[in-house]
Image 1 (cartoon, rainbow, N blue to C red):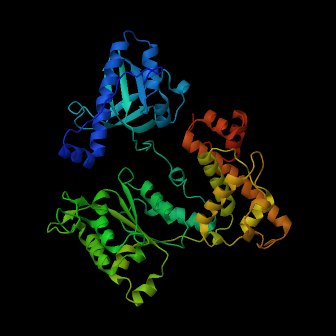
Image 2: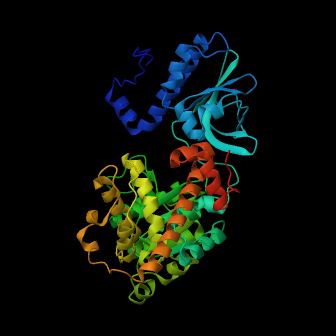
Image 3: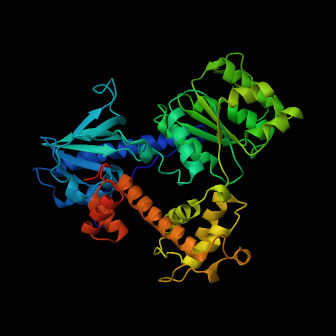
Length: 482
């Protein structure tokens, strides 16, 4: 569509039942095919309408209304234009992008033979970004079309604090856990995360994966307690054609194979049936998986991270969990503390979830009163971080616009919270420190995400000079910004 004018429609029509079933079974494949054809049409329209080096009106409207990212470069690799999806993928503004001389290098070994989406490194100086896309050459200009789905993975060398930014917490136990994550992330050994329900075990597993050498490969997560035993076996191990009644006539790869070269996260591993525990043990010992109905084992290269809220010693003693599998899984043990034992982290997490849910819902950041914050700090949080996140989402939805969250909005069970765990003066000092921690955390997170100080200042609603003062105050000068 250009200025409410339809240039054309591409459709895929089946004239027989067999063709219909073939399309139905391969929706993603045919969808990608149609998108590829559309891209070729786009390039031809661009070539026809770009008779000079400038960007004419048709060209601009065409690429600006595309859902995928587009970069237009001249013969000297200087960027002349980028549409909004491209700016979002690169985390950069139009002004910063214009006339920027960049290098786009394919990671494929067959760059000249394959005319399809490939991984490219887009770089400028020390800054690098991994983008999936493909080139088209027009008259005197190059068109780089980005794929619809990106890896969102920066290739720049990041420090560990950046990659651990999703692990919110500065309490002693969380600092120790972060150090442990950093220390063992590059290891291929299995990790077992033990913690109460709602403490954020999958967040920790993701952090280990993102810090590892496998970060560019799949992270596959499955909840062993949420899937019935027969289905869990087929989901994990896959099956071949005709393996059982109702099986697909094409067979299916399991999640273990899907996680090849990456990480498989088995949540609630303590609820895995004993029969499947034996099969999983074999995978860990032989690094091969045997699909249901097959006589041939398939080699796999995976790292297994598992999580539980059970006491394995009791389960082993009552023959509910295999001792040999436990030792295979528990090579590197992580103990994730409950929220009630994370002194000072409730304020940090509250700030994080306030920002997260206000952005998701699309409302103004409300803030929270000191008394309401005191009630949250005094609460025992049986549901841990998940309960806190749900509460903040509820509060963000009901707080009147322009108001701050106060105690009158809190659910009734917060009224019974202890009045104070320490003298009021000591509380005020602690809370003042928490506010500084919250501010530092928010600025640091925005710097890592945006990478541009002007954009950071605009998002935080402060002047650029104020931002520079706070960066100096919190010693954030070593972080990459422009």
